[in-house]
Length: 318
Image 1 (cartoon, rainbow, N blue to C red):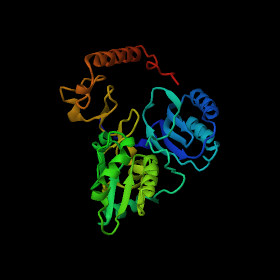
Image 2 (tube, rainbow, N blue to C red):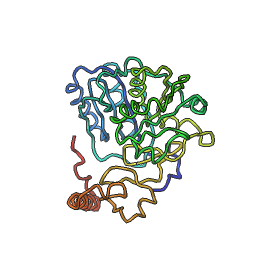
Image 3 (cartoon, rainbow, N blue to C red):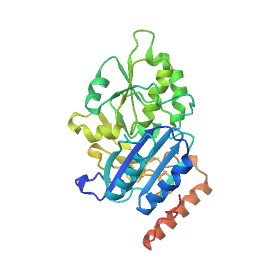
Image 4 (cartoon, rainbow, N blue to C red):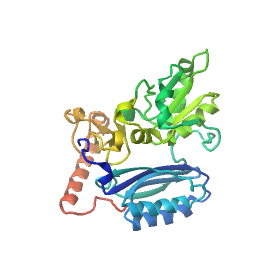
């Protein structure tokens, strides 16, 4: 999918990425009305609820998204919710899901409190100066396949398959990263900011004092900082059908592997391991013949439904 050459402000679909750490006492009571409202307004996406708050991305018409955001802001502790908003040519999700989880972003560290002691927020406009300083260590807290698509110049790649692996990686690499001299500044970033809320709280709990994170995440940086002044290299993976975005939050050049949900570059699509809807070079050897056959059948059914003008298979699942 080539990068868009239109003005993204003219696109009809509003995409809102959001999160809020706040105590929810009864997620079950919150889920039903929220899901019903989204479905009634033809809003699609995924929202996660946990005792620690809400996280997710939704898409739909402007008025519909505004109504859902009003509903969420009326939830306990969510009045200050500030979503990252972008545009899309079509709905980047096939269905609406509201799920209850143990965590809204899984780190596997139950004693970490992102509502307590976290790192210092750094506005996108001030981020370049911080990460260019020689006494700053810059760490990308995202998954390895996300980092492979793009990251900030000079950032450390933990090469972690999931965010749950981040604490063990940091503990193993702490001495090599921080040394035994004057403590450096540690600057961390992620897609929208939520993983860094937990990552900075984790480092503070581990005794690291000068910890910073990019306010609003990569998405806010790409929206705010002009490409000519940017220290970002590559594209940014997003967890929807746009796959990646670039400066100005325009749609990037990557496709999505339907087998493993990882981004696929144009070079990947030229590989013998790439079969549309089935596999990519990253997952071809990871899947069995029966799994690939199942993915191929799913792709066939999806194309059949599209040809008949019917909704995507499973589009109304909650």
